[in-house]
Length: 352
Image (cartoon, rainbow, N blue to C red; front, side):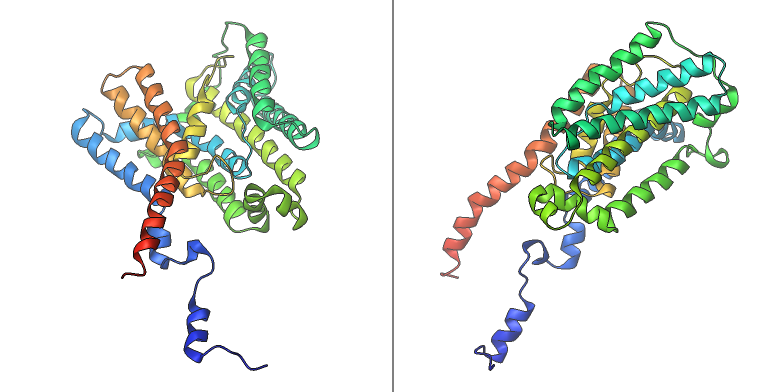
């Protein structure tokens, strides 16, 4: 069949991009993104704090900054994948506390510390599976489910230890949580984090499983009809969140040398703020792990600079809350500005 299009028109149609995000050149798609903006903001805050905040530019500051944000970095990895599917897990900090308490109680009861750590990880995995079961099989909203398990896991943790704390852990384990690579400035806990981050990045960005996560976030019904195993995918993600939160709980216990029921109280706010600040949409379907890692570091740098400038924890919480609100509101605000500008641009096109 002879084409009715002129050769020049066929050429134009062939080069025309039908997907809006691919209408821009490659360099713009890489550099002009929400993730790049977070990286630029991170560099700007580091430079500003180094110039204005006393002692911020010392290597020891960066060492303690990395040690402090490690639990957030760890938990942000599975949390990113969960939020991209359009779900959320508010119980991660309580799971961390539960694993921390179990780890301490079992070790204090005479169990070998390795076995105690493994059982704490198992408890985190079970907690994550419970969330996944209630969300995917029972069909309850993840927001309501994880608010309930937030209180449940925290209550169990506080109930097991009360107001007491277990602090007598082997020096070899507590030293490992704070030691540095080769005596330098980078904590050696960054090694397992980097390994885990690479695994999550490959899982999300380079596998069919990761493409299924984005598909679920875009349209769960369409993803199900396309062959994506929605229930299995979400169950795996909630289980991973529980397991990684438990690992963060063991690290938290060794880092501060204390197993307590109120460990990491409110940490879920910082994790979610960092994930959203890193460019992940709260409505699902969008986001990338490199931006999230930059978001965690940005919040950590701001908190560290404020502490060195003698601001209280309340001020740090206010700043974190403002960043969370800005992260959620900014995409909607930019979309509204785009809609306001689009008719005006269309009206001026014929006269150009």
